[in-house]
Amino acid sequence: MTEEDKKVTIETGEAGKGTTKLPKDANTEELEERALSVFSSDRNEDITALIFCLITTFLVVLFTKWLV
Amino acid sequence: MSKVKEQMPTLIMGAGLLVYGLIAQSGALLPIAQYLHTHKTLDLQVTMCLIVGCIALAGALVNSVRKPGHSNLDTFILQPLGGIVLILVMAMLIRWYAEPLMKIISQSLQPILGFKIYKVLNLNYVVLGILAGVVLTNTWGIPKFAAPGVKCARFVLKMGVIMLGARYSFAELAKLGVYSVFLVGFFVLGTVFLVLWLGNIFKQPKSMTGVLSAGMGVCGVSATVAVAPVVKAKSSEMAYTIGTILSFGIVCMFIFPTIGKLAGMSPVQFGAWAGTGILNSAQVAAAALAFNAVDIETLKVAEIFNITRVLFLPIIVLVLATWFGKESGHKLSFKTVVIDKFPVFIIGFLILFFLSSIGMFSPPSHYKGKYIDVSYNDRTQVTHEEWETLNNAIAAGEFSGLTPKQLEAVTDLVKQRQVAGNFEDRGNKKEFDHVGRARMTQLEGILAAAKAKQIQLSADVKSAIKHAVKQVHKKSKTVVTLTDFMIWFFAFGLIGLGMQITKKSITQAGGWPIVMGVIAGITKATLSFFVVLWLIKDVVLN
Image (cartoon, rainbow over all chains, first blue to last red; front, side, top):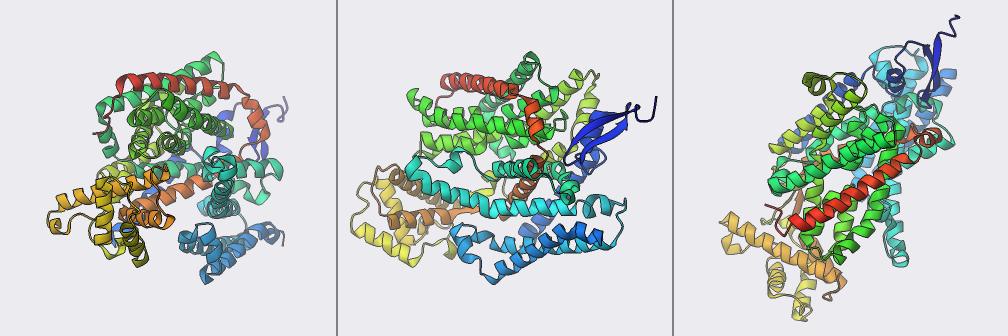
């Protein structure tokens, strides 16, 4: 079996630059999803979103309530 | 040199934003903004354009001279910068130009068509954003420089869902009472399970079924976005769900008021039915107003039933996480579902909901940060011209068709130049507030009666009363700002989501999701119709 045969092509959409070749035993579903995000995992994405929102909320409350 | 060429679009957009910001700051755009009713956002337009423009220029310059690396700065900021700026520019165009223009066009077409296209087709930033993204992807394609930025869309959408929590509080649940909360919960969970069952019958992908069940059960966009990562839904499946919900809502907006009138529903019963059966918040409000424009109670009941559905979101996420895990053949313990599978960003929604409930943003009893303040204040007075208009109208007997209480409210408005309680009661805040609010309700009744053509009032008089009522309706600045952030996050995320939807992915989904959505929607609407008629008499609000 050649190196090329061990690989599988997955559809990653235009944002994921079309198609990508991966080893056959890779978790393609997970990779397909990751190709559409800048984060390496859902948990990282969620935690970053949560931290950003808490900072935003703190700043909004600070400038519209506490410092007014 | 090639690096500079690659960064050229970002440089041009950055420079364009700076120029636009400076023009807006000079005041040259004021007439256009006034025409579009966006003049109150001019300060925001200047600030956003100058900040984003500067960041775009600086980032593009750094990218032009520096080799791309693998640091966090490269992955999360420098590489996606072009796409982020492109989506932001599109979001600005939609929010400041396309959406207001749609409202103006649909208003001018109303006399010919008999309805507002803007309201019927729900052409707000949600729909326009997704459409803009879909059109761009399926015509020119996503520009090469923007591809990494599009990958930020889902992350930003999640931030939108977290911020959504700030708009709600336990006070809304308390208003409904246990009885009605159970009713809403029954229909939310019932619809979710019905769609899951239909998905099984029609052999649809689990991800599609899962996301559609949340969308149909809870409400449109937010539930779809919240559940998508739990059931591993693709962007096209999310868009399909949002499309199905909005299309179903359009039909409901027309049919619900007609059926409600034919069945002789009371305003409260119709409010409860619309709030349970129609999915999208804007469409719920439109149907409630179409049923009864005079009695504000219909709209209030409909909105509160609708809001209560959103509060079931975390429960639905848990239910679907368990279902998806089991369907995928995993053995799931309680710990796995609640701790490992539960999305962290939904915890963010709950944190903001909790902060809102304890009164961090505005007193918890204030619905979405809105409150009525009838205390004496120079800024809440009507203008001198408005006062003269009202005074002359009273002298000319223009208010002859009013009830004694309505007439008393208008007379007091002229006397005190603002909506307020009795001057001699000003020391007794409770009594003063009570009388002031009652007068405001009477004035709202006058406006509703004039709208329903039950009484004839001149445009100037209506405008003066409307202004007086508007002056006592205040909004918490904190909640307004947090809501603004939420809207921008959703606008950004939905444009990016639209950009990930190709014709191929929509064709792959086929027509079955629409069939499932329609079956579930009709079942829910029919069942809730009979339950509301049977169980809800008149008083549902505490």
